[in-house]
Image (tube, rainbow, N blue to C red; front, side, top):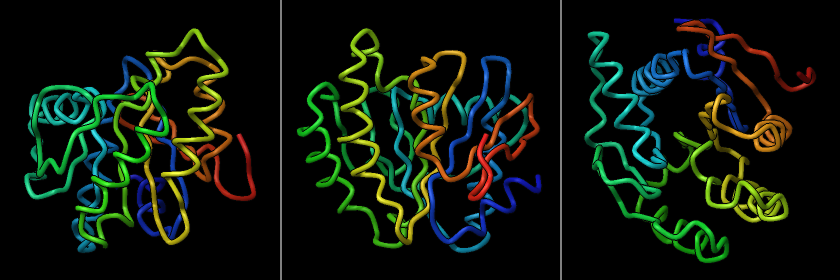
Length: 198
């Protein structure tokens, strides 16, 4: 297992940003994180934005790898493909206060231990609805990211496709994250950790 991922599996809390490009294979980082946590008896809560979870699992299957997440709690943010134990859906993302309220209500259905380990897939797809409105993106960081991804005693892993995400979104998430891992093909590189910026 990659040393960067191995180290992330042991952190007590923090936000981990996993960046990748269109030609990379972030599903392998996802695979290693999920497999590593499962070995440690941890079942994370997965936030699936616009069916990214389904895409990751399909890409793994095409490469001959399988990972069973049918019992994993999942919150769907838009999208149509049901994978895992879906606890609920959030279809309104433009109204942040509504979004946070619905998210909080659904997240309470997840086992308490699962809420300590969250994986968010498809971060770059979430703010599409207001990409041309920077003030709304700033409100997104203030209202959604910083409030519902509280990190005390929790580990939150955010997957972001840099090829799609705006520079504003990418830089904002890099700034908010304690750790940044960059995927190159199938390999991962730790490029930011506490005490050392990008």
